[in-house]
Amino acid sequence: MEAERENVGVVGVGWVGLVTATCFAELGHRIFALDVNEEKVESLRRGEVTIHEPGLAELLKKNAERITFTTSMDEVLDSARLLFCCVDTPPTYSGDADLSRVRSVVEQLPEDSEHALVMKSTVPSGTGASIRRDKPDLHYVSCPEFLKEGSAIQDFMHPDRVVVGADAGSEDAADAVEALYAPLGGEIVRTDVASAEMIKLASNAFLATKISFINEIANVCEQTGADVTEVARGMGLDERIGASFLKAGIGYGGSCFPKDVSALKQLAGNSGYHFQLLNAVIEVNELQKRRVIAKLQKHLGSLVDKRIALLGLAFKPDTDDMREASSLVLSARLQGEGARVVAYDPVAEDSASTMLPGVEMAESAVVALEGADAIVTLMNRDGRQQTVRP
Ligand SMILES: NC(=O)c1ccc[n+]([C@@H]2O[C@H](COP(=O)([O-])OP(=O)(O)OC[C@H]3O[C@@H](n4cnc5c(N)ncnc54)[C@H](O)[C@@H]3O)[C@@H](O)[C@H]2O)c1
Image (tube, rainbow, N blue to C red; front, top):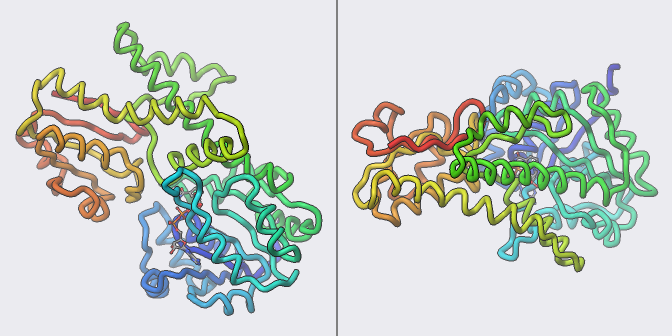
């Protein structure tokens, strides 16, 4: 089915926003993409992609004529009815989601019913209701994003499902969002706003739970002589369990899982419910990074002046995103034990070099390994893997 061409506004052109803008342009729509970061907007106007995401630079170039990058909200409001909000929602010190950027977008929207805000940023359940209490005439749709960095274009263009949450009064806007996604073929889950918001947080929390679960199984396997890779293979063939997210390793990181698990835990706590399981998921994940130190000490004794090579620094393959990467904690802990840390990542070397103080960045994996007492591989092509080779 050929979708009607729309003018679409995208607010915040980071990972989610830039992929959303580019993919909607690929579908033939005219995009007005806004960011507060003037430097980023300038780079994008020159056709320079600000993040590493496979296929993105090529697709952006192909559709450049259909995308206007701007710092002017007025330009976006004058041009588009649907505004996809893709700003970041980082954690606060308390672990709640920081909604200040979302609020600043909402504040700039007029009190009319001509525009609809489509929330792609991950926000706690209840956010949409609170926005609509402040701006009752604003049409509001929750359309959480499920793309994965490293395969974001593929995920956006071939979604498993598209969640479209709307409450009374915003049905037309929800229909328009559905129409935009219709050509992509994923199952549309039409629901209310609060449930749509919760689907996103619950999905990430569930995947994080799977990771912490298999990591605990791995830790038991190390004591009992079982091979966790075999165990995961045998478990994953059960269709009730599924094979994905059963790769034991150093734990989850990145810009989403840690903050979203914590945001759900805080959301539960703020509403009077103690989400016990998530406490364990978070604790297992924290301890998993530190277990590497004990493993190295088991083989090398004291780590003082030992040269440890870290291979793979971003939180997963095919991205340069270093947010909450396990390498941040691990390199700091290793240096705390007196080790000399040398590291290599073919994709994330620029971002990593500024974020890993004291770490020597090698120009190749071979150089990193020269003279190393141990190698810690933080990832491989199949996902996150952590092996220690003394
Ligand atoms: N990165 C992912 O893999 C992923 C996947 C699914 C969902 N999400 C969610 O999507 C949201 C965005 O994530 P991201 O990784 O793209 O973030 P990001 O940090 O890469 O990008 C956010 C962008 O928003 C811009 N911005 C901030 N305030 C703004 C404002 N008031 N007006 C205009 N622009 C503004 C920033 O300058 C930045 O360019 C988050 O809520 C995140 O949890 C992310």
